[in-house]
Image (cartoon, rainbow, N blue to C red; front, side, top):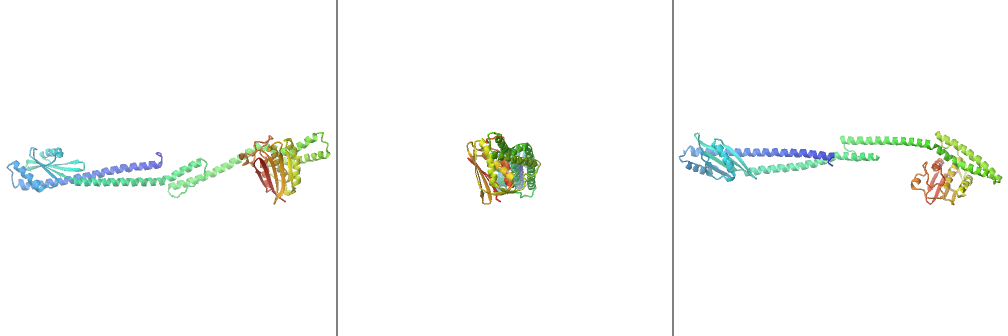
Length: 477
């Protein structure tokens, strides 16, 4: 908080105003005190002038004194009854400074004594005595007759009313200054908040960008420098986001290219394995001298030849893929699905029996328009996956039937449920399960299957659970 711009700005402005207010208040007090003293001194000077002229006219000029005691007594009576009124106190001293008559309080004795000494030396002085809420003016001046000192007059007057009024005005001004300070402080805080709040919002948005969140919304209304800053920040954010997205796309391309390079031979291995399975299976049976069935031998030789041809085409396709050629170049034709599926089931049953599995099929008539080799590759991959992930001593069920405008193939096998992280990306390349019974899987089978289904405008879906169900739908012909 102490390091915030809002605190620094508000605190700095407050210090400046407090210092200025104190200085102004002291100046005002000085002006008022000076004006008060000038007023008191002017009043006391008038008293001195009036009393001196009154004494000179009524006593010294017309009645030359013969006895000092009578003179002082007469002057005392004259001044108290004719010149001095309420709030005045009087003291008369002789030429030696001795008190003759006095009604001035003891509180002022020190100043009276000081003024009397000055008056004896021929000086007229005015001293002020402050006490709490009161102020008293003490006038001391000498009386002369033909350059002869007759005595000293000390006149004291109370100026409490003026002083109280002066203090009251100063208090009012001080209160006004405090109110103005509070008002300015609140106004400064609000104005500062209005200026600083966009910067605070900007700071929070910058932290969001640091965390990778570029979905920010700044409601820029001001047209000042802060508004320009926010607009430039939004523009900068958009450019950074676009650049990062471009970098991300380029990175993905590079990673994909690198991954393709690394996995190329693995892909070839995986793709070549399915036709080799059938060739190897029939070849092992032909090597068995106990097989005497000529029809079976002829069919096995024919199947080896066909799978070899398919393997040759597959190798050419993989070479084309590596060169960036189309994944599918074979012309589409009408495919009798029942005969194709029955043939695949017979071939794959040879492999399934190695893992103590049986393939049970129920296949209906139906036709689609597609590429026969790719459809065959699709079904073989799906059955091969079922063999890999099934429990031993179980059955794999294959159902094929017409469903509205689609020809549907369902493959069911009992297995452990697919983990959620794998299931959510099951059709992505190089994703494979952990409970496979056959080593060597590269996680490309379902990716290739999904691509083949897409090329035939179909759908593929996997239901997860204790029983895995793969459903493929391809438009009927």
